[in-house]
Amino acid sequence: MSIQPLLCCRNLSFFWRQQVGLQHIDLTVNSADRVGIIGPNGAGKSTLLKLLAGLLRPYTGEILLEGKPLSKFSLQQRAHKLALLAQDPEVLTTSTVLDLVELGLLPHKQLWQRTNSHDRTRIKEVLKQVGLSDKAEAAVNSLSGGELQRAQFARVLVQGAQLLLLDEPTNHLDVQYQHQLLQSVTSSDLTLVASFHDLNLAASYCNRLLLLKNGEVMACGTPEQVLQPQLIQTVFGRACLVDENPFDGKPRITFAPGAAQ
Image (cartoon, rainbow, N blue to C red; front, side, top):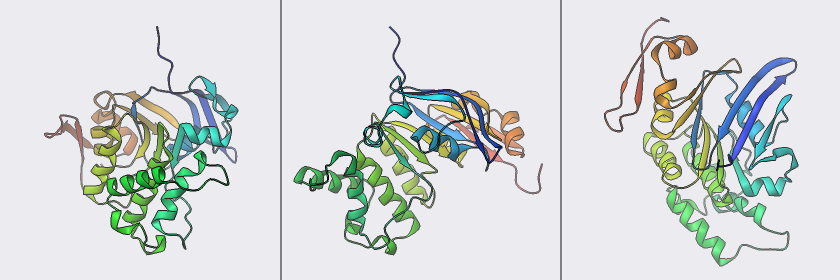
């Protein structure tokens, strides 16, 4: 018996003011998959994540969440199933970190319901997980870029969705927290679809990669299948070497320095 995909899109296309944003995208995401979306700037990575989150409507094609059209879910129903961390999410500049993280509880609360002891315990655990236990009462506008990114990630985790859609989740993070954030997802049973600029992070933490260029799929498969030197050079316009990461055995990409190759 076949297992129903968690998320599936077929022949997905989208246009920005009559300009192609994405065209003919097919993608299947199974439970506990870690799918990395890679490609140069303007390839359509953020657009695809917004479509999968239901923030944009496709021009053609459809998106199914657990076999049901995404458009048939209410906002609250959708928030129970998936959570989006955008590149530059809006925040209340006067709020504290605790206020920000508590926003993740909104899909699970009625207007009259307050944060309870179980919620507070969960928030405390997540703040510890992202290394912000000592910043709970700090004002959001006092945070560094990396601290704010971790606070937003904590909000997404508190939301409790099975599917995480993360747009450049390691932006602003130093090396330690880049790996800590991704490890916290890949060591769990959560399902991840995330865009990456860093191809090596994508290779190490994703079991499948979707390579985009100018809104089209150039390749989709395992990191070993997608991260081929000639293909990467064609897409990114620079010669590269692909060898094996000595720590995890995954493909490792080194781009040639200097003038354009």
